[in-house]
Length: 209
Image (cartoon, rainbow, N blue to C red; front, side, top):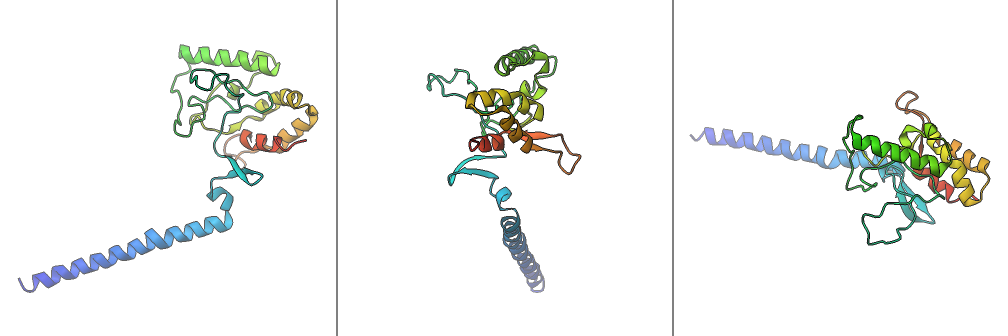
């Protein structure tokens, strides 16, 4: 018994030392190292890819948002949003671009409610942009899986350029050039498709004269 107790105690001390060592390495040293590298080399991304206007934080380029006119009745939660013609519009969002309500509708392609919603959106976008219904891009009528996607297709961005230019009394060519500057290719050249970050686009649009 006298030999067993010190032996067990020795094992506990070894385990305790290992616990402390792992805590220092993985709980303190490693997080500090990764945070330091991130802040030194990728500070914008590490801090949420925030966008500022006159030193004031206005948005994150990672999270889409609505660009709508003020509600006629702010207390009416059921009042539908009205797109502001002065801004490029994002794709639909089931959760209304609420970061606390991320997700998709989970409706299948044959669901009658989804088909009705898509047809209504197509007619609305065609009327707003002054284009034929058949030319409305797919991302203008379908929501993303997260409901927070800030990206739209170049086709949808260009389809909105004329309306934005007219609402802001800016030359159409100037707005289209701005869209062209925001077209991004696939990640690493092959992952995904060309896209336009509508939050970043509108951020730069606000500074366009």
